[in-house]
Image 1 (cartoon, rainbow, N blue to C red):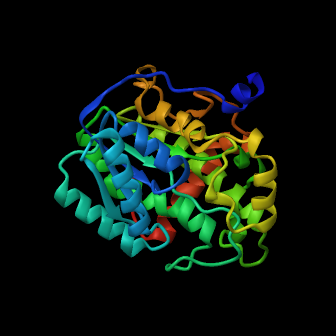
Image 2 (image 1 turned 120 degrees about the vertical axis):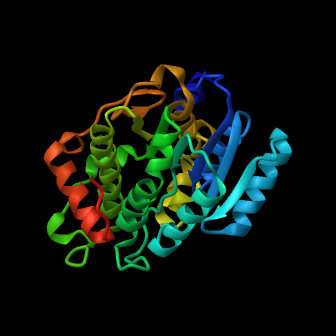
Length: 295
């Protein structure tokens, strides 16, 4: 029905092949990450980087069987632990000589207040700082393999976010819905500043996948219940993956960088998401928290 088609939104029509190219997708054992991996595995080599190896291996073997592509590889990555992120990057760089596309897809949503191994508030730590560090560690390899792309999965929820520098870890005041929004705004600002610094050597774009029926709401009973009731009006994971796939492969985006997409087309970014001063400040604070120098 036409209503269902409207809900499904834009589709990636690109048939670009990725022979000889290597893609990393974080959190690709379920939801839109898994569907992104399924599509890209029909085009080239895909590395699924996940915390839960059993789930990731199950997803990978399903994708291998379906696509006939044996180059779907699982590697352990826990974005809530900088030690794990560094180990993943070190191993990857030792084992793989190339990297063309990095899709920072993994995310947590609506977690009760908790902290990562390094003491960061969970949403900020996983959704922003974990991917910030991962990108930093892999950037040289991406540059060597340019043209290369970085794709950051953000959300429409960035409109409700703000970067609360006085209380980044949510210790003074915490609301799990807002914490998610703040972290998704951080994704948009990170993409913007990253694109500015890279000046097109490697492109960096962010996206909103749409409201997708997935496990992301598992921490909230109410959301899970609402999601079930309104599932007809939500995208399937496959539909939700289209914009990630589009940002990763579409030929017309070869030199497009620093943009934000939804339904496979440019979308409106909140005024806070366009604030270059906040983007720069978030960058230096992130480096400080992670103990890295990224100039």
